[in-house]
Length: 80
Image 1 (cartoon, rainbow, N blue to C red):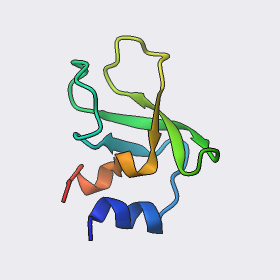
Image 2 (image 1 turned 60 degrees about the vertical axis):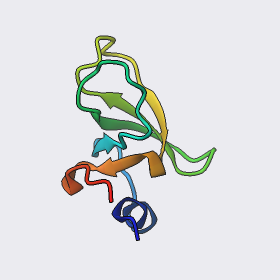
Image 3 (image 1 turned 45 degrees about the horizontal axis):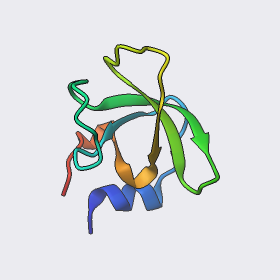
């Protein structure tokens, strides 16, 4: 099974967690390595969060992601 989906099912995200955006989900916006910090958890729709991406020229901008679109940074962003 895909490690990312196992992590999503078995773990809970917290504000402040470091995450990597799955490359197949990331729009090519030239922001470099898609790593960021969870800034808000959203319960509706289910399993969503807002993430601030490192190096974003708009420092206050946040991005909406479903948990299946992100990986915990401690997995090194491995997409299996």
